[in-house]
Image (cartoon, rainbow, N blue to C red; front, side):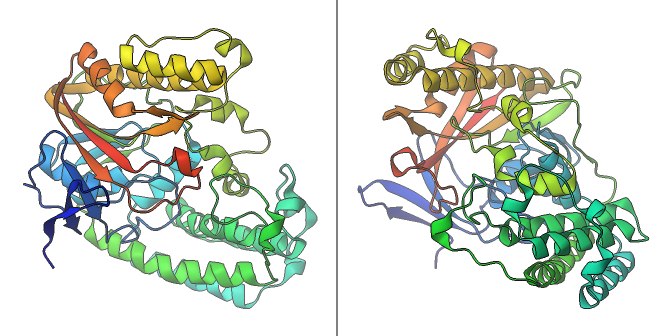
Length: 430
């Protein structure tokens, strides 16, 4: 089968299908639409932990190779689970990943930290032996984590098993980096052994599912997780270049990037959508078990771009972003739902702040590539990409080109009429 070929969708529209690795010199003109078939979503450390709405690796890899050189400095201001940073590392670029969510930064850091084989296999052996010798009497009541509705989310036996494994990871006589890797292995199974729906971005218990979690499920799933992920980490570690840095600063977010002007050669990101996935709620159980949260997640939710956590006082009046087309749609939404109108306005305002920040830290002639999706809000088509281009131009960017990437799988459960079918890739040049 041809790697690159022209196909037509059900509406007779021409689409360029690319199977697997994207050729670096693939032509991309204004308005072109591509269907990228990914084969690498779980290779090396990319598959360490499930994460909603993440990049497929071939896309940032292609963009990084096309628009940057080895040893360049790259930034992703909405790092998510670190896909850009893994690809930057493997292609010998230094990178920074910024995210407000400590859980995201934790996963990302583990994914880009190579580990020594001997020590990793030794720790794996000890944990697998601990599973074989499981004894719930080793877990005291005081060892159990405390968080809201804990006993609704988890059956008693599962609580004991998770705590037992967490305790044994903590007691390993090894480095923090290796312990963190096994914490991610543990985190990756938490949702599946909880009473929550495995396939919903919101952490909810659906009684209609009749989900059954049995004693020993945690032990078995963790063993499988370790046996699957240790080889992936070792393969990644052997592929890693030396003298390449990756950093995930804790004191920044996409609207407040504390680097000097001109620090970065290239920037690439996939920001959240309006009505964003509620990442803190998606990962709340994992955050509780890993110690990133103990009670309410509201403060963290409010810091996310695209958040739905907004105050009533903010949406009593209609807001305008200053772009006629965007303001027309926001006004239409306001007539139906003032709250959602404010959420849409705030999203564009936050993205404007981000564009200003990235413009400042990019070198002259550097590019910022934004992969952004559209959605429907109260029946109104909200075309983010069309609104962000004039906002970027007012800041000083030149829109070099823009093209579409068709979405073929929906891992996010959203209402059918709000689904996103195309991501738009905006190439902005300083």
